[in-house]
Image (cartoon, rainbow, N blue to C red; front, side, top):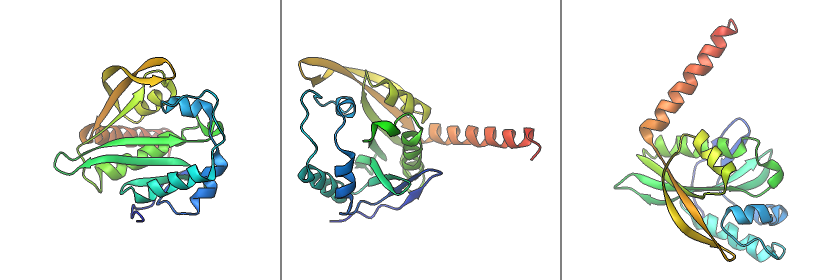
Length: 198
């Protein structure tokens, strides 16, 4: 079953529905030990990423009602999802990942998440988005904070990687906080243009 999520376009990032041709794109991204560990997997002795795994990943995302392929310059880089949509409480959980280590740290994840949040708090009229992130994943935590998420708590030793236990940080963002952040950003942009005499 194909999903019917809308395309969301940013300055550099495009979020679009998945398609079966993404199998080749996911296979080309391979498997990075650093990314596997940040997702909570054991990065020791990783086998090569297989075509069958790429197919399963694409099929799973095709079946998901709120999952986007993250694309930059026409190339698949990862996924962004809203899991566990609760219509009564108007909430969902964000999950996002880029699979090319060379593209991390360029603000692409932040842009992709911003597009999802704009859709979630706009068209979907959600009240709250939350997420969980491993406490040692400082790069992801910085990204989420830059998107407006606030750390709300810690689940101690909730993730086992190899023989070590790690904490999960729970972060959340409310619609009113997101809207206030957008308003501040818009005001800062207006002031920048004004100071440049435009």
